[in-house]
Length: 399
Image 1 (cartoon, rainbow, N blue to C red):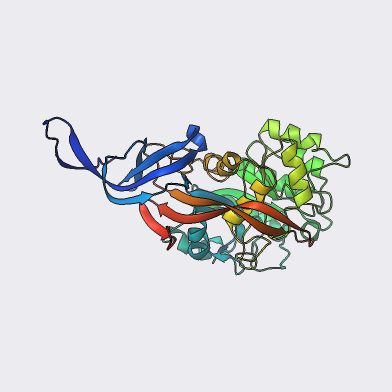
Image 2: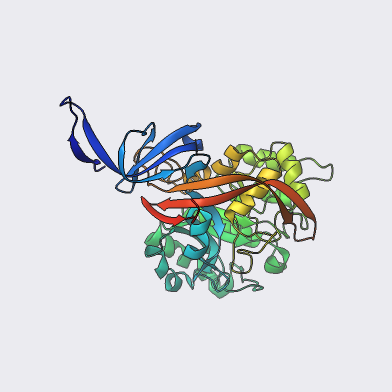
């Protein structure tokens, strides 16, 4: 890593003063990967983190005073839908940057027949983008579309096509997406899921399953998924894909799946996170591995329902999730899942300088479920600045 530039020798002729690009001072720094939660400064040079500690006397081109604020690694959204991979996608930079999201994972918006023609924005986007490919040829082109997930469609050509995509774009492509809800699976039973699992095994990748309104019993999904596969919409309350059993306890199959390494994502959206389910599961210690927004154009910045990643994190805090667990589920854990631990999702020396700064406000705020139930939270996590690769790309006027 390139060293910060030297300013001059000290008066004693020994130590030299160095100039950093940015120093964030006086904030409460929360870095779950490094088990760090304390008041500290963060020093940045040449797009990388060069240290967390005491930099009160250090020289810097820019100083951001984060006193009274929370400083974290830049957030990672493990479940979003991005334009132009789908017409219903969010504007990636316009939505992610003011939400302190430095890395976004598109959750299967594009299918194997549309991926190459819509992926061009990835290399020029200010937000780091990773993707899942949908087993459907068209993916999810618009709201209300029920994708074709028949593995025998066109003679089963999708398997060869997806294997070729992983040959070309591995690293950018990090998994396969399948929705197993009743409208998509129809009368095919487990066949699309079993074939998708076989394909994921051959591609040496993971499978992400949409579990809301599932056509396959929840316990069966838990039994079939492998280590590092993801079951998303974990707190939904639709059909059989709810997390809680009839006795109000977390299903034993969910606990067993977690022991095997299956991961669980909130996948919030506008209607996939029921307050009663989430609150009960959190109270029993069944916390999310990841907190994805499932953001799309219709849901982004919609008051009370979804709005943004910080809004959803605030909602999770109001339901009993600790702040450090919420930060872990949007930094450390998704970074590890995509194989970029020690590069993003942390403030380790040498990691990319992706940093978020928040104001945690004591403020009553109203949330609403898709079912119409309102409830009030008492803390709001408000982004005030975001740094991506060592550049300040967002800053609140009052910060």
